[in-house]
Image (tube, rainbow, N blue to C red; front, side, top):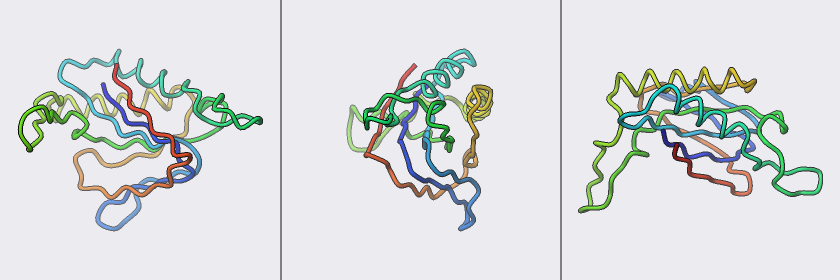
Amino acid sequence: MRALVQRVSSASVSVDGAVIGQIGQGLLILVCAMTGDTPDKSATLAAKIVKLRIFKDADGKMNQSLLDAGGSALIVSQFTLAADTSRGNRPGFSAAASPDQGRALYDQFIADIGALGIRTATGSFGADMAVALVNDGPVTIWLDV
């Protein structure tokens, strides 16, 4: 699985102009299931993200995890993270999981993050979404598992 993680002071996702998910301090997680991914990869990615020490401690150093900081996660499906841009100017997405597998792994990932004690908000799988965020830092990290 693949994720783009952004430390945020706030983030929201809207569908058709209506906010369907929002958080304050925490992480905006854009997540993509890739061909061949399994529920085990979802659990591994969730644990890695929740434990990333990317929040500031009392000394201003990035030394706290999402759990330590008491933050939330806004989780948004993002199949375009599977883009292959190695040839030509039009990205290919053949590395992305099928829609059925992608939805199942997206739902699994949400459950995995929640099971680790993080309050979650979500986008809507397959919908045309508008994501708004205030990137804190900015801190943006790419993860593959």
